[in-house]
Image (tube, rainbow, N blue to C red; front, side, top):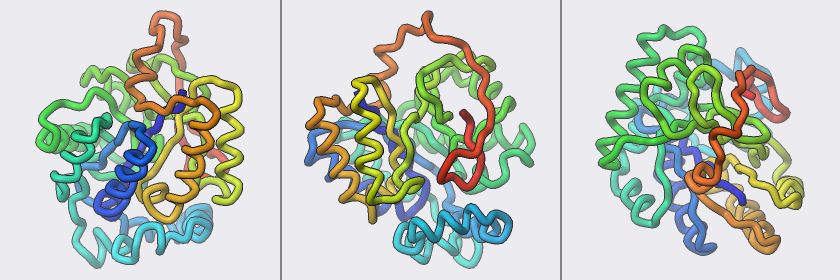
Length: 283
């Protein structure tokens, strides 16, 4: 099985990338899990990272960020007002649900979490969840049953707060197989495959397809801005290869249902800088 974990991080991704992905998934008659960013797109604040983090600048150059996100995105939350992401497009959210895809919670303010979480108070984290969960329920009519942390960034405070929400599963780490979080006592369905933007696009299809040859269950992290944008042809090529290999492509909920929870190990995450990333992820 191949699980599709589709993160929507920006206004551009919600407006343009998601409809593109919906069309692609319809063409292949497959379903995925959309993790939605609900609130403000403060992507313009990433300019600070260009100065602070050479790896971030390298990533922006490698992925052709201007084509990936559009020029306006570079100024949201600084020179331009920060538009709401999913809250700006209730009809697109309805379209995702109507097409039969799983929809779960990814973020309130993706950029601030990604850049500032370690320096924020527990009160800020709690308010972030309250705003995001409220906005999610307003859009979908139900409470999310899963959470996927922005940029796979978590800490002990986050897991303690997560425990209070009683999610059915999380997808907050980059790990090789599902496990139970030691602090939150909840199932983790990690992303074990690399993102397209972490590897060279031309090599990505063959590299990721090679992982699928073992016939095991894998999770591919997809981004609306990437596979729904300039890398959509490579994404389609990968889907075609996966299906030709007899791989069943599914939302994460189906992977969750096949887990023997009692048999899974309890693990404690650690932070690690993975190849192609500009900042550490929970692994």
